[in-house]
Length: 267
Image (cartoon, rainbow, N blue to C red):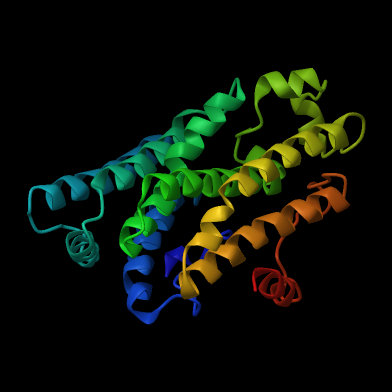
C-alpha cells in the first residue's frame, strides 16, 4: 500500500482496534498517493498538477453521489459515507500537495504553518472524526501534534528537499542566522547551523508538547498509538539535538531499537 512510507504515522498499526484499520488505511492511501504525485518520479509539473486535479475530480463525484472513475475511490467513498468524514479535509491535502509543485520557498514561519495546516492537520482531524472524538479541544491539540510532526519531517529532510528544489525553512530565519542556500547545498553544518537547528527543534518540541495532552485523553489502544506517535516525534528531535542538527551526514530516523523505548515511554 502506498501509504506505508508515511514515516511519522504508524499506518493501520496493530495498536489500532481492528475495525478502524481499514478506514485508516484508505485515508492514508489518499494522502500518500496524492503526496507522491507532487514528490515522486520525474513527471513535469503540469502532469503532477493534472494528477492532483484527478483526485479533486473524484472528490467532487463522491460529493454528488456519483460513482468514482478511479476504482479504489469507491472504497474510499464508502468510508467517507459510513463515517461522515469531511471532504474539505481531503481537499486541504490536495491544496498542500499542489503547493509543493508551485511554491519552493517560504518567507516566514507563518507561511510554513499554513502549509502544515493543510498538509498534516487534516489527517489528524479525519482520524478524530473516525474515532468519534472530534471535540473542539481535541481538534486543537491534534493540529498541534500534526503540525509539529510535519515540521520535524522538514528538519529531517532538509537535504532531501533541497535536492527537489525546495526549502521549507523560513527565509527570514535563515537570514537571521546567516545561513545561505549555498551552505545547505554544500551540506555544511558549521557556523550558525547548530544554533539555527536548535531554534527549530525547540519550537517543534514546544508545539508537540502543546498537543500531547490529547494522547493521554484518548482511551485504550487509540490513545496508546497516539502516545507512540508523539514519542516518535520527540525521539527524532532528540537525535537531531545529539548530532547538532547535522542532517547532512546523519539523517535522524527511527530504528528497530528505538521502538521498545517508545513503547516504554508511552506506557
